[in-house]
Length: 341
Image (cartoon, rainbow, N blue to C red; front, side, top):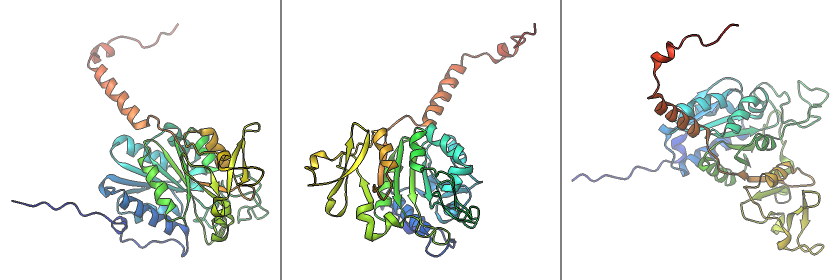
């Protein structure tokens, strides 16, 4: 009698290739790569059933370092290629990886349509507020006043908020994390993986060469407690040392306000509860920015909806079924398809 052993459990190392990782020493992409590999191991993902698709830029080298299938495509088109992959084989787990320049500038249109169509993709946007690969030009998310080779006097463009963009085009899953949050990031990615539809995850990532410290005002350990709020569905919106601060909803002005427990009669009962199915609340959380507000991290919004590839294949199946009654010869012989008068 043959005794079958259970399949060996994969580790993060099993999702790493033998390719030399070519990012600048200290780049935040290393931490994200490690976080993604850890996530896939924890999910017990099947490498043969997993695909990473990227466009152009530093982050776009990601597929080379994942022991899965992958495509390194052209600038801004990764969401379109990934959509094709998912439509051709809905059983695949398809991840899209790109930077803020790739996915919100030349690729903004493609990113928008992948999100609004709700294609079942995990879309990871690495936001470092700069073009790193091409020597540090300002990007769509760069703050006003950013001095770069392309804006020596300082950027005068209003920056794009990636999370608000995704919410605005009808995204069904919007989350945030950071390259240095190695426990938080895999948890967010696991939620994204399990969501059926387009999962958009903005990951704040430090570019050590061209925009070092862009997010230190809320990522450094000395300010994390005061400048980050980790939101969880059904939990009060608390932050600060010892969770002494919170957010309340000013219903008259329809905006969130920062309060301190114990001051002005504020108690835990006054603190707003995070409801990840509330798009309005998610939008207010996405708008928060230091120094007046902490940065909201975690799953800001999640609402199940029919995913695109399921609807497409249902339509094809119905058309195929109805097509049994069709008469091609009759169609071809029906005469002119238009009349000239």
